[in-house]
Amino acid sequence: MASFVESFWGERNNGFDVLYHNMKHGHLSTKDLADFIRERAAIEEAYSRSMTKLAKSASNYTQLGTFAPVWDVFKISTEKVASCHLELVRKLQELIKEVQKYGDEQIKAHKKTKEEVSGTLEAVQNIQSIIQALQKSKENYNTKCVEQERLKKEGATQREIDKASIKSKKATDTYKLYVEKYAAAKSDFEKKMTETAQKFQDIEEMHLLHMKEIVESLSNTVKEIHLQIGQNIPDVDDEGYSIKPEASQNILFSIAKIL
Image (cartoon, rainbow, N blue to C red; front, side):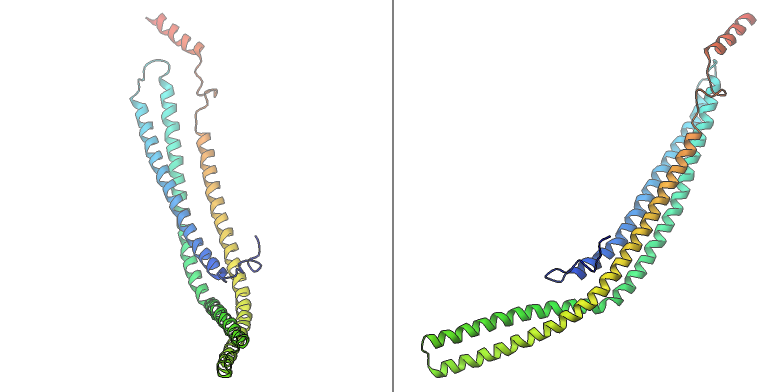
């Protein structure tokens, strides 16, 4: 990950605002992930109910003929698949609790961080205010200097020139004052912003690591259940499930002899 300390130093000094809201967005991501898993659990639960219903319906199909035993196979395997999906629901609900717990921890951590970086926010607001005042004082300084020079060139009275000189000196002093204020504010801002940027990066890295662990847990849970589902799907080539025409013919021939 790129260093936050080396970035977010725009001309308007809005980097703090960007990083702060990025931290807040981390909690929104956590909430969205919990909602996504909750929706997945609801879908799995509905599917499990449908599979259970389907398994029960297998008993309603004709039990006559040589194919009849296969319905029992379908019934049992479908019940097991339904059970697997229900187990996935249970594990997803446990994962949702973990995500919600992490979300609660985020809220507390973000509140604490907000208090810790309040000094940086004040430094940002201070330098932004001083920059505006500095720009205005610079413009006023330039205007007063130009006005004084114009009066000299146009041969204005000494009184007018002296009056313009006083205004120019006042503008110069004000401009100088804000240059000094800006230097002090800049130094304070850079020191606090450097510390805060690193703090925000630590929070972001920990957040991404935690989210990665949750996603991996979700992925492994789904994989595990799907493996179990695969193990419960009837294999037509399996000796216990195979339907052999020869065997069916033998059964029919035996019945014919009896009749």
